[in-house]
Length: 440
Ligand SMILES: *[C@@H]1O[C@H](CO)[C@@H](O)[C@H](O)[C@H]1NC(C)=O
Ligand SMILES: *[C@@H]1O[C@H](CO)[C@@H](O)[C@H](O)[C@H]1NC(C)=O
Ligand SMILES: *[C@@H]1O[C@H](CO)[C@@H](O)[C@H](O)[C@H]1NC(C)=O
Ligand SMILES: *[C@@H]1O[C@H](CO)[C@@H](O)[C@H](O)[C@H]1NC(C)=O
Ligand SMILES: *[C@@H]1O[C@H](CO)[C@@H](O)[C@H](O)[C@H]1NC(C)=O
Ligand SMILES: [Zn+2]
Image (cartoon, rainbow, N blue to C red; front, top):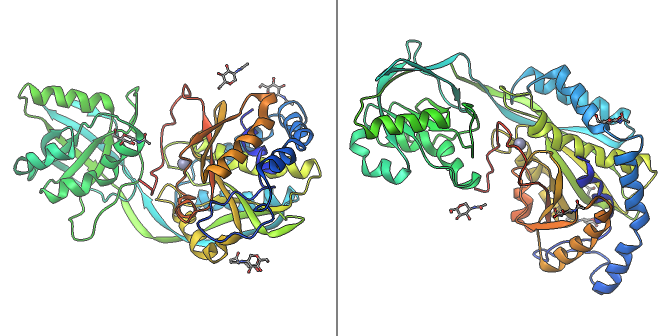
């Protein structure tokens, strides 16, 4: 059932859901809600056909099998790597062989960072080898590493208060997990804030609600005018242990070695395919996921799953011989993990046509048992989406949540285009790496 969320766009795109921040030309403005509701209801059979093909028919498991093949063949796909470019070329070919229209690549310059060898060893109060993961864009240490005393803080406020103690030390952040968007600030800004008060390096408790001694990587950001210091994530367990040691008055010393390097920007692409609309071909409904991943996983969940269910949406509609009124466009973003680089480039190149974008969607929260869709847009548009979601009653995925967002599509949302993101069961396991959202 993992691909069901996106099969639904085949129906959604029959309506323009724009919020009215811009002037949208469409044929819906004069229609009453009752008329729209009746039109939605007429798509019951189409929705059932899509569900049958995806869940019970020959497309059963297809997106999973397609994804498994790519992941098994290419492996991790970090920004700037040869394997990401190989994955893009494979997808370009896959989409053409799938019979989709207007398959093409749009160039993007993307960051190229490699973590190299890395290690952290606690020397005092006892010898303890720690699991770490360097953060994307971090500089490395000198080859002999950085050996320094540790200052443990639980917040940026505490760091400010104890600024004079931080000079010449390694700052360890043991911030509690509140939610992703709030807690990820420590990963993104931890090095800059530590450098401002004279620290030599920073180690950040992984941004995770639970841990099995597993550090999480992700992007971090330096700031102009602030010295660049090496920065990595540590496990929740080690962060808490160092907090306990510090509160007992123990002196903690760590030797940190990181071989991380930033290389010149690399050439890459957003990958695009379409089913061209029959009645309003210039109007676009965009579905998407990102093809790049971090280097330490397989990128199957983040975001292979999101990318492949987006592709599956077009495949299912094509297989059924359906042609939507508006153009259904698939975009597989590049370099999302570096801060939505591909998404930003796409927005820059296409924003002149924003009034012809009806809806943008991204799946990047993991592909588990779906529970509904997150939506951002006007209340009128929300009412239509809720109506459309009733068509998914046969698979009981009818909920419409608030605050849809996604790193690659936030530029459009901020400009007023309605947005949907797949929502997953809150009981779902947590992926090992999460992307940083530029909206936060
Ligand atoms: C899909 O996967 C399920 C679970 O692995 C399996 O039982 C089923 O036979 C598969 N269906 C097809 C068409 O391969
Ligand atoms: C995260 O937590 C902060 C602080 O409690 C809160 O202000 C914010 O609204 C929360 N964000 C989300 C997405 O829940
Ligand atoms: C913008 O829309 C026009 C008219 O539909 C189309 O010809 C043009 O290719 C579009 N430009 C981009 C960058 O998509
Ligand atoms: C939207 O599409 C229409 C029809 O092709 C075109 O006339 C108009 O210029 C487009 N608007 C923009 C902003 O591209
Ligand atoms: C349908 O979904 C709702 C909301 O997720 C859930 O509470 C309910 O138990 C589900 N019903 C069935 C029959 O699975
Ligand atoms: Zn992601």
